[in-house]
Length: 332
Image (cartoon, rainbow, N blue to C red):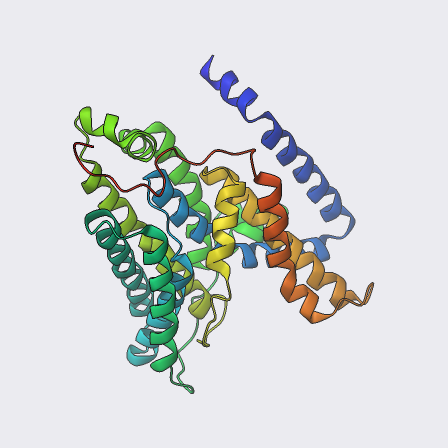
């Protein structure tokens, strides 16, 4: 039975998920207010990581490494906020953030897939250019009418713990949860997903089978930029209502670590992002409660320490798509 095979293949992740859920609800029934606050903060921190990891999943499953997620996020935050400030419309801001992500994705796609530029170098260029442009054109004192509002999803928001954490939130946070679920389905249950995985694993065989490898890679990497742009827009218009220089703060690189830890699978990457968010939220909660005196510098360092630990743990345990990082030349 295919469903049973899937369960056996993912038994460790499923078992861990059940244990975490049981522990979370035990904590909730013991201290409901603290539990909701902590898990809401964890999700708040995880949202841009989820979106960034999905960008990486799409790109690397297609065979293209995207080191430029950090820069794409930063440009999305910048474009979204300043478009909203100029027009006094948050809708325009969201659209501008998404379009800026598409533009950066298109740059990466065309320089690496069509231009055969080294993918790592192209990503580094995006990060450097994004930092330079956003710093040069940054203007303090800009304001937007308000950030993106939170709203309750009917029925789902009433579920204990899960409801207030995931379904009483802003639109981009809700979108991040939905896109992880939808992308998993698309990647493993649709024709597009089969073709994407084929060009990321065996592009020559995919080409022989009639798949336009170049066109599919161009499309996937370009459109994945939308998610990076929205991740940045979340930072400047939903998590906060301001833009600061360098406000992506390494989240794009953390998303790459989450991508690896999640074995290039959307649902596992979602779980890994939640883990990162929970660890950071737990440290902040401990500091606020005065249970232990944790220096703020350590809390700021924690995500990067976790990144090193995760990458060390994942080394040799997960396998990247076979053709990731390799340019495709028809006929080779």
